[in-house]
Length: 126
Image (cartoon, rainbow, N blue to C red):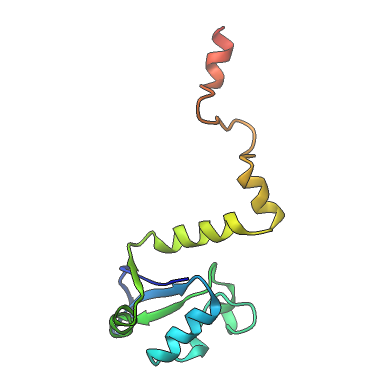
């Protein structure tokens, strides 16, 4: 299990923010407790988040660069801006959600060309 921070830089007032997330909620909350970020700032959690933050697409915290340094000192893994996308994709692949299972099987819809199948126009030319 791991905790991650990305290298994005989003302005929020006078602060510069980035994202902190983890493989498990327990790990994420332990990290924010250790670096002195208030738990109320969690985003994307169905019960712990409040208001519009409940509807974030993934469970994470927006943290300042100072908190990022603390998290890294505590063992968080630094990722690039695509780290959250990779993380959420991995979670979806491991999910039992039926909609996700469809994507895993490769049912990308009509017109999708699976690797190695060639173009639909190739079949018409035969």
